[in-house]
Amino acid sequence: MTDPQQVLAQRVRLGLAAAFGPEHADDDPVIRPSQFADYQANVALPLGKRLGRPPREIAAELSHHLDVADLCLEPQISGPGFINLTLRDDWIAARASALLDEQRLGAQAPDDLAAGGSPQPGQPEKIVVDYSGPNVAKELHVGHLRATVVGDAVVRVLEHLGYQVIRAAHLGDWGTPFGMLIEHALEIGEQSTREQFNSGEFTGFYQAARAKFDADPAFAERSRQRVVSLQAGDEESLQVWRMLVGESMKYLRRLYDRLIITLTDADMDPESFYNPMLADVCDELESSGVATISDGALCAFPPGFTGRDGRPLPIILRKSNGGYGYSTTDVAAIRYRIRDLGARRIIYVVGSEQVLHLAMLFATARQAGWLTDEISAEHATIGLVTGPDGQRLKTRSGEQVKLSTLVEEAVERAEKVIADRYDNDAERHQIAEAVGIGALKYADLSVARDSSYALDFDRMLALTGNTGPYLQYATARIRSIFHKAELDPGNATAPILITEDAERAVALRLLGFAAVVRQVADTAEPHRLCGYLFDLASAFTTFYEKCPVLQADSSAVRNSRLALSALTLRVLLTGLGLLGVPVPDRM
Ligand code: ARG
Image (cartoon, rainbow, N blue to C red; front, side, top):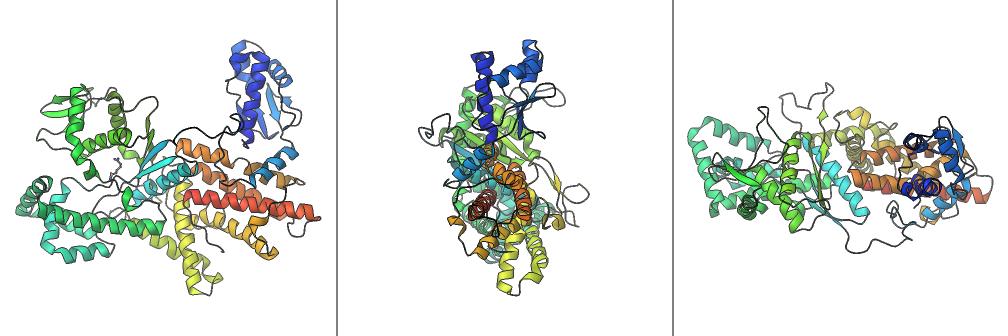
């Protein structure tokens, strides 16, 4: 365990037990970063209240029992009973130096000290992450950006920590629109259909089908018949349907690759996959009493959900005409993920407009006994991307802006930003691609995922502030130090020494990397990692301004500063890698 906050928390808990009895061994020590020291332990305030004693007295007694001499200066009591804790420079230096040997930075077990360094026994825990949420025959739009980018970062972080992650895009490939889509494809022919999809712009295909459906009653009737024959397994219908699915997957493949998203074809986990399970899921829920027939439809009424009229809200599992819907598929999917895949945790990275749907899904799964105290599901809510007016981002004609348009614009603008620095066209294109994609993804990741934000290309591409390009540039700058020194950063492994405040500030932040990675895994909130990396890069900038590296006074200090720089570079690269933000070699 290197995170100072965790080490201190553990020590303060030991102190609490020693001073006030073993029943306090699990009290929250309330460790917070402090303006007056590195941290302060504020537990004396709530504890004083509980014990009916003055907090300052509690603080004095606690600090008397604190065994922290190896890592802190003498604890100081301040204010109403805060205990100020200042880490010793030699402790910080030793822990930072130890990180240089770490193979997988940020993946240190949180309690390796307490557990004597032994790894968790047994199989790694399985986690399903349901993200991106694409649909067949529909282009990805701005609404998919966050569900895709945030989900992929969460997946990368969980894998880094050793979890077995199952990616699931839950591809929408089934349902009533496929009647009209198949009819339209048959009318315009296979070649023309494929061409439209291959062009990467096929919103017109869906719109044309919809327009015919709305305007031509005969077409609408044929479409309805087509849904029936598709669901009955008619070979011609299935063939056209497969073509639409296949073409859509090719399109998704291209866009995911360009956005550096780790979803593969095998992770598409399409809705139709669950079709054979739907009848059985309905049977199980009906016979266990979770679902009942209401107005001819099979419905679950999870407790705690009522409509405006006060009546219980249903999840419709089987319509009165025998048909199944989006909810049924999700109910089958959650059972499959738990029972067949063995998931212990399921994270749905899905827009906030599906809050009610997913809450009812989880409640039903709990009633069914699939979700338990040990097996959890959570909705990692995704907020809106808006225009400057704070409204959902739209094109002039009122449609959702396509994701591919955003990508193009980000890369084009990135190219302008860096234009004057590269004469070589190929190199400039390559760097602009990384800067543009990185800026777009980072801007999305750096905002708390459940709040909305206004898309702003100028701001996301700025070289200062909490942006992708700022962090990419920070890595390039560190690389150039090593380039100048004709050294490989991998060989900078000298012990880290602390001779200046600015070195101390960088080293202290480096110690917090594992804790923030763990937090991202626990909360599915990548913006915490962005905030951390920005803070680290800023501390490094100050260090670099104040402390000469290559011109340092002694070779021990020079080597220490090189090691500190190399470690910062590794943490930045690892962190950006966990976010899925590409980093150009130079900038
Ligand atoms: N395809 C869906 C949509 O466009 C999102 C799927 C989210 N995942 C899920 N298991 N429901 O709204």
